[in-house]
Length: 109
Image 1 (cartoon, helix red, strand yellow):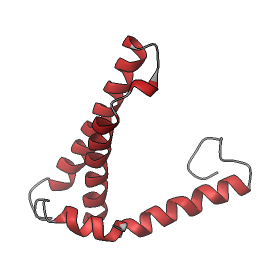
Image 2 (image 1 turned 180 degrees about the vertical axis):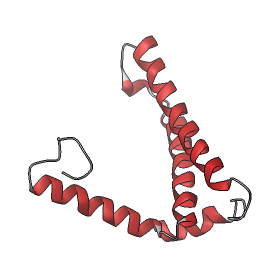
Image 3 (image 1 turned 135 degrees about the horizontal axis):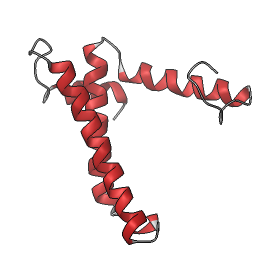
Image 4 (image 1 turned 120 degrees about the horizontal axis):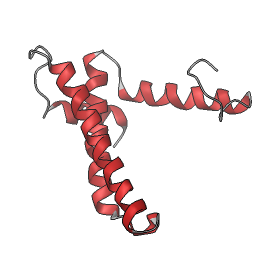
């Protein structure tokens, strides 16, 4: 499945764009889902001596899927195709790598 097909499929389960506070709802959902991933990572650090090989991969895949759903729907709210977002990100990172600033900080490096 390509990213634009995924985005179209995700939108079938999304609330209407014009629902009151929907973008804010989506942003909070994205933060919540990424927080769930961080919480599970914290427990691996705390309880499993940072042995990430013990992470439940099926559970991680489900949580990453939730994050991807929110990203796809938020992108659509701003008329951004998910494939364009992904391609732009890869191009930005490749440019930073070529200029030797991949490990730096700041958006405009």
